[in-house]
Amino acid sequence: MQYQTILWDITDGVATLTLNRPERLNAFTTQMHREIRDAIDQVERPGAARVLVLTGAGRAFSAGQDLEEASSSGRTADFDAASTLEENYNPLLKRLRALPFPVITAVNGIAAGAGASLALAGDLVIATRSASFLQAFARIGLIPDAGGTYFLPRLVGMARSMGMALCAEPVPAETAAQWGLIWKCVDDDRFRDEVAKLAGGFAKGPTRAYDLIKQALYASSDNDFDAQLAIEAALQRQAGQTEDFAEGVKAFLEKRPPRYQGA
Ligand code: T3D
Image: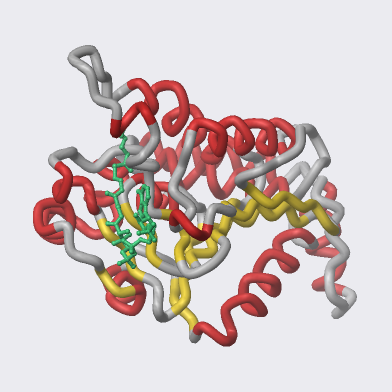
């Protein structure tokens, strides 16, 4: 498929998907969703990549749903604001979470509406210091979607979630990092290097362990203590059987850097 709205690259195990409608602040259209689906199809193939970076072109990460597209602007009596969620955003969010390797959302600028929710869907969220996170929905009479009401209370608690959703004001990246909404923010001029370093590290890391770490941590929000201890034991059993674990211990004992194959 020839892409018009995204840039797509896989090099040395690092897959990079760049939302690429900078003149519309990378707002999502049906076509963009189609192209993202095609890219995720590729990255889901076993061995295709060991890390996925999601980022935006230009000054924004994404301004969320394109409000000029027919589904939003050409409202008729039977307009269904949930249809794009069910057809596009929700399946995408589930596929990202299920990827068996880290997903980095590299938030290069403002992330608004469903763009803010997608930003928070990363396993690791890194932002430029000039970026911000805007739950814009209430400004146009909608509720946070694309996972917003799931991510926010779990990440920053109810008071800050309510403030973000009801007041619909941008939260600067530095505040977001202080609140624990994101992993960290870095100076704009260091951002691309920092993202490349992170992604490159993951692409050479113990991929099976990363997958199991994701499973363990994501399970914890729905589990009680006993259930989580049981999951840890089950997943650690799997980790302990990987070649990368054997290599990690061997490298430690031989006082050399490990050479992980991701297996
Ligand atoms: O089907 C459904 O609709 C339901 C699904 C909903 C999911 C959602 O995501 S709803 C939330 C949608 N997003 C928003 O409400 C955010 C809209 N954008 C903004 O509020 C502002 O653009 C920002 C605060 C993000 C940035 O403001 P600023 O001043 O830095 O930039 P700007 O001038 O507003 O935007 C630059 C251009 O991008 C501008 O076009 P122009 O005037 O240069 O021709 C603007 O219209 C365009 N743009 C920005 N966001 C969108 C957009 N065009 C279409 N859709 C957008 N979401």
